[in-house]
Length: 95
Image (cartoon, rainbow, N blue to C red; front, side, top):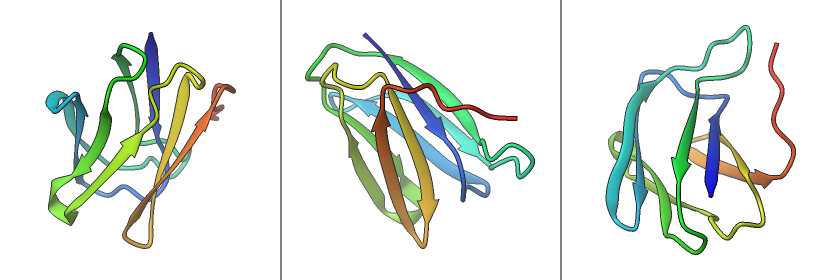
């Protein structure tokens, strides 16, 4: 299955790693574009039940993302030093 992770508000030159079953599947430095509220969209091909984590090494944060097949999209915001993840079946929209 394809899991789309939408990094949205609160990112400012933050290094982000996406881990699938413990291995780095993607990494980037993200900054939110204020005009759209979007930093990046990353697509991962994962098996249902895979262990997916978002890691911000510079902040010591590691957050689990559901990859159970129930939700195709995950919205991710960086608020007050925490990652807030919202799984959804609705594709997020941007300007």
